[in-house]
Length: 223
Ligand code: AP5
Image (cartoon, rainbow, N blue to C red; front, side):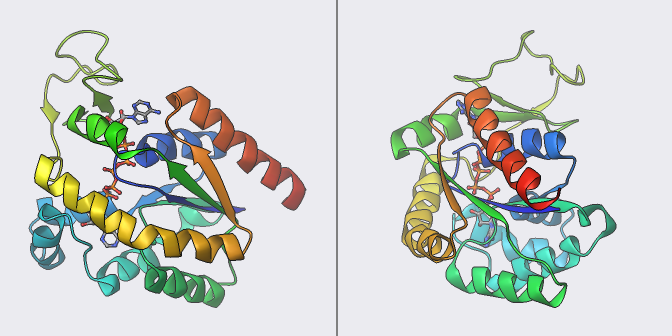
């Protein structure tokens, strides 16, 4: 069992690395951002409410994301652990998460803090696009398609850009991130859970480090 949190600014590679680590450890990824985007796409009540916050780069109210997490972590596929990407975003969410986990006799084992400077983030976000069919993630500058116009994974020719990946929203998202992340990293550092990750490095370099730390934890704690 291993329960992992990914903290880090927009564009730092959390989603990219969550997919790789989840495959390696055979546990699911829970992304509040992806869950909220699905609600927006389905035009649900939650989606209608969340849309304004997301397009302006602000945090969606705590109770909404806390409920998403609460419903998800108790599902069967999380019984060997999970990777949470994009939650918690502030101390209040972190404390609620701890309480929630206590009620199901679980705890956080590792918090990876992805560190990348803002200039690189802006380039990563402005270059990001994904496959409309399978969701595979690409980047105009850093991870291009092997064959122009065709998804490497599923051969689809349809791609998407995220609505919140425009210049103004990215600025707000970074401001929000910098406003909350200091307290959050202090909170997890105090509990000896925090691992700083140099996420400027290449995708394979970063994933190797995440896998190494996670496997070490598993070997020491799960026989
Ligand atoms: P969310 O979807 O969580 O977005 P985010 O945190 O802003 O992070 P991103 O998804 O933009 O980036 P990422 O770190 O996953 O990077 P990626 O791997 O894609 O949240 C969106 C919104 O939802 C929030 O603004 C908020 O409104 C709401 N929300 C979500 N959670 C919430 C919560 N808990 N509370 C309240 N509101 C919440 O990589 C980016 C690009 O870089 C890709 O193109 C990738 O190919 C490339 N790349 C990745 N790694 C590398 C590398 N090492 N080198 C070069 N390129 C790389």
